Image (tube, rainbow, N blue to C red; front, top):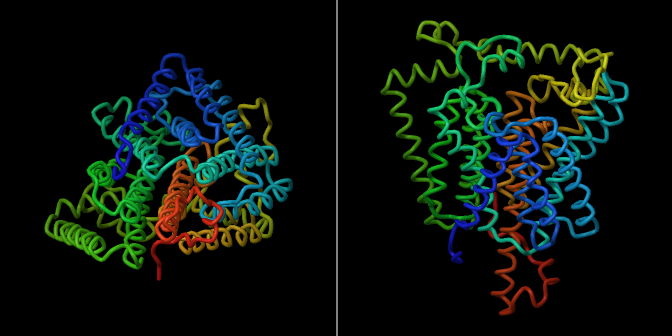
Length: 502
């Protein structure tokens, strides 16, 4: 790999080959094929192999949310999946314990007080056993992500180019892989029977899920990938790249194909957020900033003109937003109530439950239907599904007023801390998580969409931390005419910003 390469092409192909091999093994022998990843995990525990371990844990999360036709999952996979997270969380937390924590990753530990609080109040909730199992799963996966990211930053054995190759590996897997599945509706469309089991009614049309389990997972996932890719391109690479450009062009088309309004709104909000931060950041270079802003302006102008001049495009947009067929129906439905009707019932139900227990809520990730539920098997507990509305209603229902206070503190502290520390890639992913949960509360679903989103947030923060560390080392070597390796302790006092945000 050349020093000026954006990413390591060989490493990218190796990552895609590994994902393909795991999918083929699971297709051939079921969930037992997933066990092939464990030798790689044990190799990754070595301090100079943290990049491999990072790929392994991201691959585990990706396969958990992958299309069940491409990567069939059974009880063996479920058990192996949990064992892997537990193993990684235990080993890596012990490795990073007592080491200097990363200033970029540490703000995400602010969620732990909320989890501890929910552990206390869930005892008085609807179904404590389910709450504790889900708390254990979320905390285990969350700490696995955090500890692997922290160990990667501390290790000094991986470069930004290598991390970028890992990000692109999974970006290509989900975005390009989903595009390639469009001609195969038997694989890429969600089966109506599966939709009925989830929601209790049949969809009016096929739902495009691509290479994921569900269209409601593919849309937000593509949104967070595109936002993180754009942030990396603008703040780190600072020049155009063909593969990045291709993925960014395909992303909105793929989101439109899913029909997910939440994902499209999240995508637009995320792109606007990255653009706003980029415009206000100092030290990125006048030439580069001018070039990017000119292109963004031209894209916005061309899109606006096309929208105004093309009636069919306006009609398609209205039908997409309001989920209608036909211009007349769409005109009659153009109200805020119609737009929010798909979630309003869940919000009203959550607020009703909140008023019954306003201070401490009703328990972590449980529903009223599970109160006094007769448990006949462990599978019933481990797969107890729930559907919540938007995040603020769900948090009030589950944790009450005290839980909402802790959650708001976490959101605000983490968001502003990441911006202040110039972790713009991770902050962009965190913003996407926040916005997407206004449409569907998935942030605690580590075996679903939430796990896919959290994985990308930790990936983005790890990239930020490694980039800032490399910049500090470069400045140290320039100012002292000395290699940073000669006196690594001096790096502690170096500022970890190369540009300022106002």
